[in-house]
Length: 411
Image 1 (tube, rainbow, N blue to C red):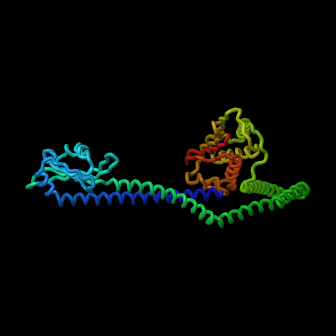
Image 2: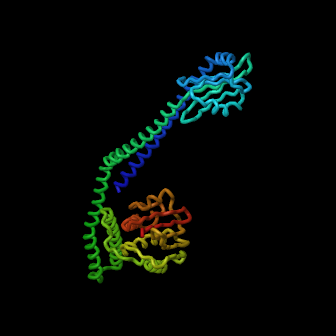
Image 3: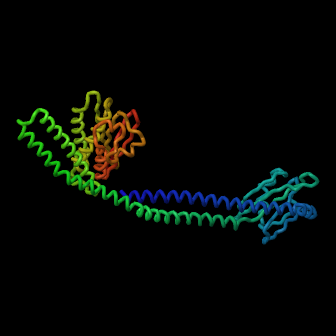
């Protein structure tokens, strides 16, 4: 139990760290990208402000001149308002023809920014209008290569993913170690309590047996000397002693379950026949106002402890009768591809959703259950029996409509 809890805590902490660290890295990455992009755009804007007049005047002197400077950081292309190319310097041959399809058809006075990929190269482009005497005379396309920055960010993503994975694994291992350390006193207390329950149950069996035997001797040997009130008192004490014995047997079973002592009487159980017999038995003692039905698939066998499986069904059917004071109870058995399924349904008062995970805890009793007899061990015992057979038990319920207990046994 504690091992599973440590694993759950470790997974929880590792997941939370993964989400937090991933969010942090995403924010960091987006901030760096935006900061870099803003800085690059500012550089292009500054270049435009500083040289737009020289670009246009120089371009007007030599029409349709395109220079090639492969080592140049920036490149530009100047066009008239009629979309005619005037002048430009480029650092990547053939790029001009690729870009014209994106900008030539746009409005002259329209500002635009484009991030463009071509031949495994990345470019940041800025289109700005050129004004002369208050009127748009043409426009400039300014650009620069951002391939190195793009590769840097791609490598950064890979590095961030690697760091996230490594850090998550490290945090998971550290969380498991810290959870183990933190749960040592809890486990020690739990083991001490469990040993106390087991020892107390064992020690109480002998005096309880002697007490019950003494009552039998008193009832038979001194029957003639007992008054009617005395006989009634002896009967009441025998009933209470029997209830105490049943409680001790349940505690001993749960103690053996805690110590992982599996069931001993393993046999092939004719499960369909068993449920049919139990159904007939309960139908005879069922209150007249409760309608009891069964839906049992035939010829289903199961390997397990017949006594414990029978006890499991008794617990669930007794609970159903207790809380379905009127209405119906249904017992079903079916065989799926991977498991055998048993359900016990009633249309009684139902169980609140927040209590569904608590009803299998020992001695837990809901407010409605406190109004009836019981010690809060029945469903704990049912869960222990199911777990001993490597099965699963859970409940679904709607308040005011009823409850269904589902049992799944692996085939």
